[in-house]
Length: 325
Image 1 (cartoon, rainbow, N blue to C red):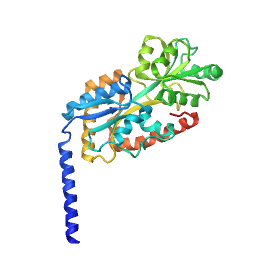
Image 2: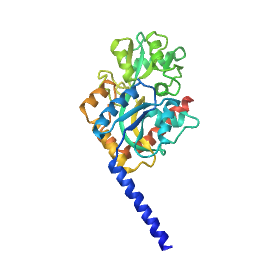
Image 3: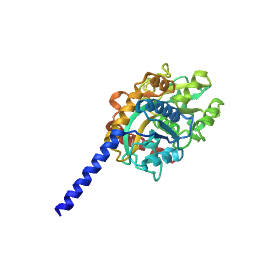
Image 4: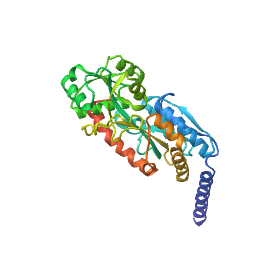
């Protein structure tokens, strides 16, 4: 019996030593960053900027791989099932790691418990924008007109259950209206119909709304976050315009498979933090409308708590709207 205990202790010690050595040597080969959406979108662009700088910091290539499907769940699921060795991570969003948990009848994973959080990276505001001839120039006028004409109005989105859809679900809840939703297959066709005056408004991610606002092809009504966006500094928030609770945004964060060793998590979190503090990265993300989170919100512990809060926050508007993925 004593011999068996000694052998077990030796095996455990060897495993610990092996794990420590692998953590010290990490990374010794390229790391894959899964972007759970198609190439060219805001999350993809942000991820590639981040991956480029992290590659320099870590001394190994961070390779971006786009794996779309199921509102981002397909790519996230691949990471959830990956070996927890630090070589496969996902750039998650509010959609993949919060809204999906209520939107999907059977989510492909438990976002709060099936991943190892690494770092919250950035938040991207959503802007309430209307057709350029909409008879309102600020949020107060927009709400008054919407309440009086709700039955005749329509709003578009990038698809049922998308961040753009849920942004307008929140707007409807706050305004007390039930305006008809027109889902599109992506932001592009929805924006085209808004520019053509075929729908009344969109709740669009700022990175894709900004060029149309700057070009005057749509009318900007409000930023749907607590703070103004540096990308559109002259556009007042909903709260500044006297309306509380009209908040919608997306965010990006890095996640690893569950049970990834703590030293590896720390090394990736440190690299992500260094990347976020790089002036060139800050400048590039600012052009996308992405606001890098403050240092006090970047830890794995903060992200773990944040995901749980976001799942709870978005469950109410999703359930009330009846939206499904």
